[in-house]
Image (tube, rainbow, N blue to C red):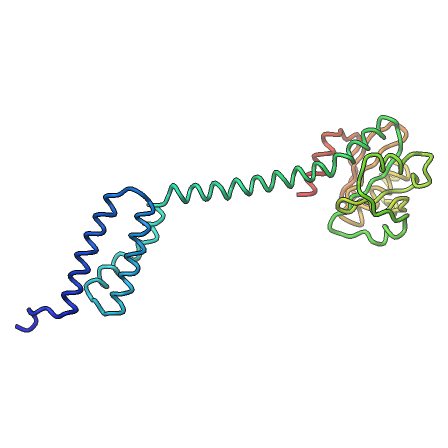
Length: 248
């Protein structure tokens, strides 16, 4: 009959179960999410104590429900988790919008200069470096390393300027060099249709992932060369979209 006499561990085990049930009822009576969190932390602490002191009944009960703790947390804290995820998504969207705005502000003086030169029929060749660095071509021209501005671009390509003949190369937010000599395209189809400026713009894009913007001095039309292919009569809104897409 000794098995009917409870041991000290059994008494503690039963009291803890009773206390656990009582606390659970109090927690469910309250609707606040943080009260539930404290309740879950209390259960974890209780499970740890049950394992340390070998309280079999408590250990068995908590072991049976421990696989559902994560699910319970997700369900109970669904509003809080949704709010956190919404904030993270908003931060990401704001970051993308900010970077897009930065790129737009970077290209604006280029677009404005191209627009002005197109109206005046001023020939120009602007090369935007991408991942493939154009060191050898930069060194072949006149070094500038100057901030991009509409006025500077217009000054460089002014027919009276000693720098107007050739291309400028832009790296990030700097005009690295002017009066740059570029290789001409060997494509016979292009050679029959275009002049030296356009062939140079196409040629640099055949050798690299750069973008070349060409303004014709004959008719003021804007062309864009990329990957060895030239697109003529490009509108300014389209030019902005092309540059933005390349920078993504």
